[in-house]
Image (cartoon, rainbow, N blue to C red; front, side, top):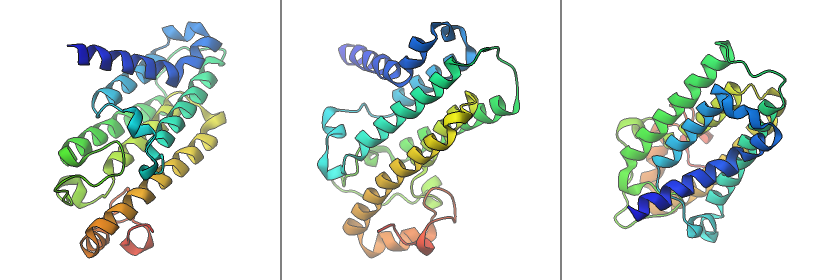
Length: 222
């Protein structure tokens, strides 16, 4: 019970950091369905993955990639929510952006949850090799090497579209790209070093983030 309470408090505090600035700018957004949609998505996101520890965030062996992802998420969510808060009207209406944004948020979330469950024991917040580590190449991992990142990226881009954060869209897209490129580069290097030719052959059969769309003709990123 104590662990669940601590986890709940951690989720609430994290969500506050992720979108709190928007409420400071315009407290009335607490009544907006779009904002509650983002909050619900964040609750589901943090409830379905291993909790982050201080050692995860400050891990030099991981090149601080987990810290980078969290920092990037804080920046883009705050930028998007602040832009939304500064809008003169917040009346919800069904539009192309709301439909596309909703679909990307929850489609990405479903993919991420599925990918985490499929990887099971081998899923980690940091890039590491676990005891008895094996290459998982079944299910979605038979097509894509990093589906949990695909899901997370779709969810973040979907959030920007859902909140119609067009003024910060390009900046946020750049941050997402740079952060996940750093993370994936570290992971691919580690897996190639550990598994050698076996991982290289796996890369030739799979895409990086999407089926059949891997970089360097299917070779791992170096």
